[in-house]
Length: 357
Image 1 (cartoon, helix red, strand yellow):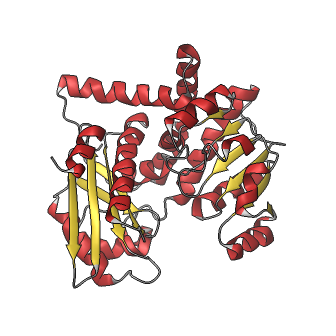
Image 2: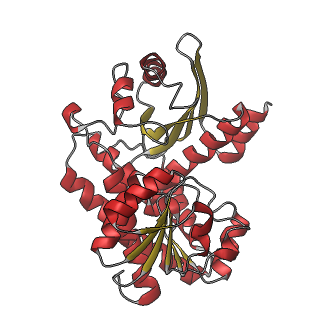
């Protein structure tokens, strides 16, 4: 048995598809973790991975997370993800994106994709020239547009749930929030927090973006390496994964971790330490599900009101996670997994077949 098959078995994946088109410069992987609840949905990430093994690890982890995200959000969707190996600034082309779209189309609706790190709405519209199994398109093309504002709205709802759990009130007025990453979601989240009366301190690996945030959002910014040591009530990881590690956790002086990044906590051991320290953690795939909800709604004709209504439910779903965490005296990440796995297990047992509604 190959290493890839062993990893698929260990993580419970149904299918992994390696794709390549030398003429178009395409080299990538599509991973389908589960279709128990419905067709697998997940974004396409373009990133200059250092090796095929690194890309495989990422797509396997991310696709599994999408299964849990959809299940925890109550959606009739499975989990998948795609990665394209390459630098989006220099390697992206229409030929590459269209070649990728043809591979998506071959899966005949088993996998729907959308934007992710290194891809945007325009890229997905190029992919859509070859397949209809694409979400996150612009309003002009019948889609819901950039899902980042909806994702940020969901994270904000999740922060209010955290505040209610920790401080007895959902208000963030007067709270200090550190936002790590001022990209699309982090920017929109910072805007909402400022309007709600919170003090925001941000950072970004791009100094130019940090300067724009200072000038336009009127927030303070620090160097990325210094963000962990800033005194705050809430830490919002909104960049790449692994922000909370054995090295960074001791530097955090916050009561809540709640952000949009995937795989925020580096390992189960670190998650246990977060719990032991009494820090309330909003499991990433629960709090950042707004983008997934937005694309889900788009699949049957986009309705922003419905997307916002479904995303608002993140507040209640997180309160349920916190209640189970307290009841079982386990980390919130374990409680969230339990809720998702119960839904997945119930359908596996019943043999029910669901479709995206």
